[in-house]
Image (cartoon, rainbow, N blue to C red; front, side, top):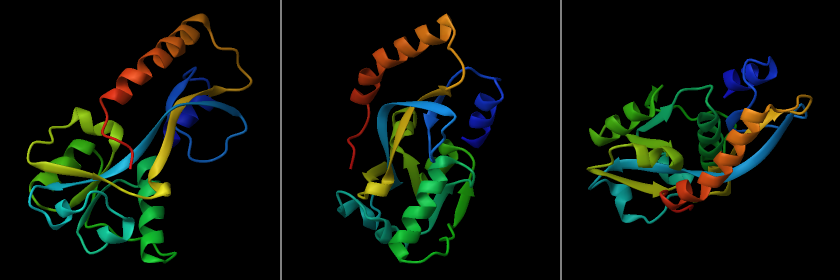
Length: 178
């Protein structure tokens, strides 16, 4: 996300789609949908008996987390720290760069992967169970952003209009929010 915001601020791109994790007075952010996080693990795992999972319930398990620097990882770190009641970051068993790698590792029983809900429909979840993280800080807004001091070009305005039109269709294909 940091790289995308840097590209936006240096006029390498006219707009961006993603989460805005902190206040950015130089950017306009239009929320499109709310995303949340899911714990993903193999069928038969101890967590399968739960309909939703709290951060602290993840702590006894080996965790597969997306690499530091991603917006999702920031949320995971903060949520897990709150779950343990500490300012110290919780160390995962595995850090991975790609969501597919995290799901594959969970499928092999190497740990519980924490993944964004938006990514799940694109993954092969055969043999896996996904349960939502039940915490307010396990949600984030995904939206379109652009610089406040720039007028969007006609093609970008048209793209954003089309994007708004498909959001409801995308949401219908997602697992429910926690």
